[in-house]
Image (cartoon, rainbow, N blue to C red; front, side, top):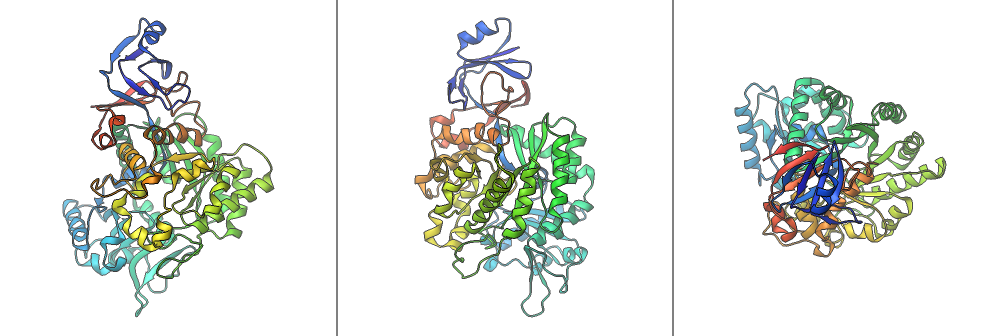
Length: 528
């Protein structure tokens, strides 16, 4: 046994929000309370003096793409590249520094940084003409490629747009421009890159993701895009270095019922231990930045987007997953797609009858006020990401919607006020994975990337303890793990993080604080 004393413990347990000591017995917490109680509970235990440091429950990131997050650590980083010239410089530098890589890979570019928001293959051909270039957008809903990449993908003027996606084309020649949107990225690019990747590369990506999460105090994640390659990597890894609840990604362009059956098989095989397959994920629409999220009212430029899953296709697939006992997660960002997602979940409950459900909708960036109460009525969890509300990346988002709608973006308190459960994550690698900057944005509505920027919709800011609870205890509850993780309570796994400073002393401390120890199942997996 190990006794940790002289700390400031925020527990995320409403029955005892604060403590000063805990006892680890095996891989679980034997006691949480004061120092006298800890010494009485475990008088012979080895004692660790926390020296007044703050201890939090290990964060449970409610929405990640695990292998992609690891791979992103190894690619050209473009999120803070402010213009085309800087993007080109970083792509050129990565190609120079990785001369043996068969492809040049990057991630994170923003539409604001590209002339007129329209990336073309010519822009990349000028810096890397001899190797395929693949650059994922910051939201991972489109891919920017050069001519060599189009050639190896076999995409030309005769390639049809896949259902729910688009191959952008030159308006004069009809040739692909180099921008592949939504399912054109998900079904044409990503499977190809998976097929040409090696198991060793995937294993490195998983190791990089695990290391990055442990160093930042994350002990559990909800993976939202598990596929066969990712599953194989996790199985090769043996016991993962974090607790993983995974959702099987359902492709729009393959038989959904067959995919649901596969997910149900995996859920039966992986239902205990650190890797659990808990459900499925449907991507109902795109993103507001690219005007591919489906809205009730068109964007400022008059355009709109159809849902990737139209209601008549989504409802029976969701009902089948619900009947199989799977947890359903639906990516829905625009208000029309949120309504479609809610309608599908309501249909499933109607046809399958009463039962315990913890279905969820991911992102919910702009929701019609009339639909907010429906989440609570249907028992649907609101899964959201404060990092997506960072003011530094909001200008294009707001411009696409216009000022009226933008003022109601990322309205977290509306969901809890209506009675819905709220879960926080990062959606890494579409946003930075560290949880503390995520909490800074939730607590202030200011930018973690550029803290000097003014807050946007500060009326939606949350008290820090509430924000941390959404990113730990609520996130554990949402994936059915509240009896094992998410808070500091006797009987739960001993998953916690020790910080070098007190984030409750002021929001700026969230940007300065570092994780000095991460404990998973009673064992220190990271120590600085």
